[in-house]
Length: 347
Image (cartoon, rainbow, N blue to C red; front, side, top):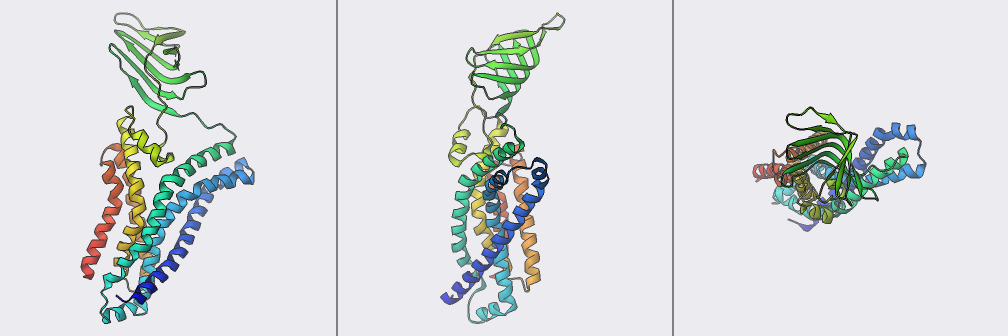
């Protein structure tokens, strides 16, 4: 293929891509502002706090924008070339249609590298700062991290808490929904505390149940508990890649948490590849589109279909319906199949 034609295609795609990034970025920020404007008006934060909150959200918006602008740029470029008969002229000159698509991988590979760095570094820190910024606007302290469904089963006993909060400076962690079984005795309480230094659980107004006896309630009861309180796993969306890998190695993760972290790990590898997948699929589709109106419609269908897959996969992975790695890569795989089918038609 003539080099001058490759440069012309890449130049036009780049111009449309920049326009698409600005367009989708503005739309997403407008949506984020519209969804939070009522809270901003209610709490009337200083301008600096409001700006800091939205600045923390920018990396997440950018990540979606980098991918969404790809089909916008490619489809509009090829639809323009179709309208002006440039593709027909290229074909008449012996240029295979698909040879216009492969060069698109080069610039969007650079976009993928930027997306990979943004996904693993800026997005997690931004989401964490976004939460902190809003608690600051509300005038509240950031709530302590919690662990749900804690269970410890030494020989002859069972300790369970529906929720365990992070221990304070004195090593005491609040408990909710407590149950302790020791031999034939069962203790239940709505709340309690875990003294990690004394290695005891203190149950507040617990009910004591023994076989053949009536249940009785005590003011408080302290029982020994020799397990080690580990910090609860952080939100997988708010940790760096290194922290994500370290947390995956923890032995105390519940199956649902394990799947959630595995999905997040694989998604951070899959999402940055999306711009290149979009370039192939949109390029092959763009060679078949004859006018700009159809190109705009294709952009919407393209993004909506991918987004429908993308937002469904986390739930399926967390529930165990799909392997986390498969769920993370499935949207890209589906669009690669689409690109392959379109390429076969264009062969």
